[in-house]
Image 1 (tube, rainbow, N blue to C red):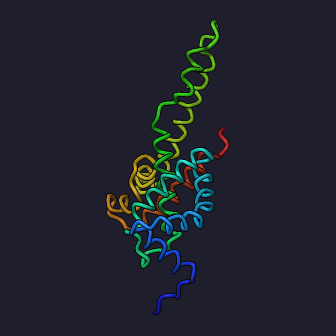
Image 2: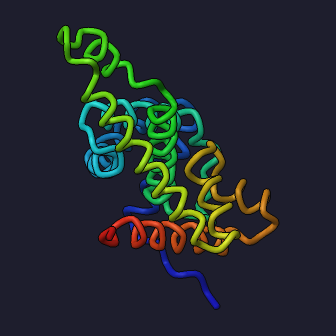
Image 3: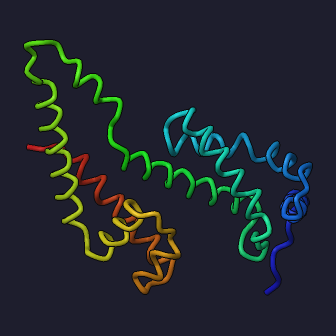
Length: 194
């Protein structure tokens, strides 16, 4: 079976990555002009904020610059490789943001009007506790293999290949577990509660 012929664009982008790996700034600029807009759109969709997406895009292009020499055209196309870098950078960004304390809420809490007795805070804490309980319940309902893969994907900085190695499973299996787990959790969480 012969490999499918590559398009002229793929060949050109592969060359641009190879040149970038040697420190060629013009090749890097050419990659940025080709990939900047679609990768930014992807980042906005994942992180949900244009400012954060700009930060993610910048971090991603730094990674592309530094790791261009590791690109292997036998494993993926150049754009697919760049998309993978952006997705991982987005997920890392979201994990970090989730771990940080909610600094924006502290001043509002501290400056509550006298006599308010924190009624809104108590309600927010109760709702957060209920949401957390619903999430734990939803996770408890999915099969153990899906739950473990999903927890590693969401709450660690591990890549899919690293999760696969940790679980002793093929990468494709792990990706399927994560996807099915996410779908089942989403379905459970979106069911109307009685």
